[in-house]
Amino acid sequence: MRRLPVRSLAVLATVGTLALTGCGTETAGGAPAAAADRTIRAHQVMRLTEVHAETGMTLLEGPTFDENGDLLVVDVTAPAGEPKVMRVDVRKKTSKAVHTDDRGAYTSAQFSPYDGRLYLTDYAHGEIVSLAPDGSDPRTFFSGEVDGAGMNPDDIAFDKEGNLYVSDSRGLSTGDAHGRVVRIERDGKKSTVLAEGLAPVNGISFDADYQGLWISELTQDRISYLRLDGAGTVTSRHTAIRVDGGIAQTDSIAVDADGNLYQALHGRAAMIVYNKYGERLATVEIPAGTKGLESATNVAITPGGTKAYMTVSGPGGGYLYTFDALGKGTRQSNGG
Image (cartoon, rainbow, N blue to C red; front, side, top):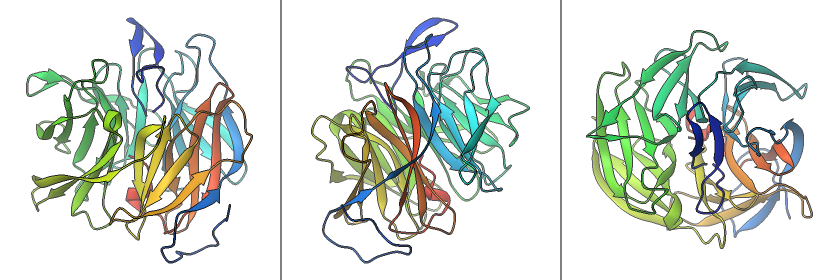
């Protein structure tokens, strides 16, 4: 998700101002073979939000599809009373409010395969909140310290059983290597640090076969791979991809059915697509000359299809853009 200098945002909350992290040739349908890096032009679908006077910005994140095919999106910096979670009908190009409150700064949204509820990361308060699919019945699923330290939860990935894997962006404000990956049991009663000593962690997604986790370490502009065993324990970790983003930095990650990674960029309204071996396949960009849009934070690919929807934000507002992905959408194709 988007940051101001040193990747921090001014966010209005009940406790005051908070520092947050974030977050050519068009393809035809189907999954084309790997090729040299090419440009995929994304096209505007609609504007969802304008800059909020209270917070001085808008920041769309966490696109995820519900069972009806609607797209749920969060606005990280929405003030109290404004929609913090929205449901978008991408066919009709309409949206409606799903949830708001007076405190949360939600940076990601994912539906659980276990109970079907919508889970949100509240970066500002170090909590995981869940909602019924219609936005009702808000509950605090998890809060408090993990191994003696509070979290700055950014993104979420679920395993097949509904356990949560959370990117913890600790250390962002200081630049220290305090980032972690935390596993939370599906009942919310037990949490485990799977990896620590990382640069602040932003994106997180399982690979196509649920054999490991891709994570983006924001301040190092790198994607790391955590291999897992059958119990969800990390057995190894290594730097998998070094992202050459220039002034842009690594944000959220999604993975398609072919195992390709979609790495969002803060500081550039674009995404880079890699295969699982780290080969750069494509760059997704909005039309040249577009003004007022600074970051592409996240993406969701239509389940079983290749139509992708990218959240893009900046002083010009919060927008949805669409493009044809290189592979079909699965659960991992909702950006973590």
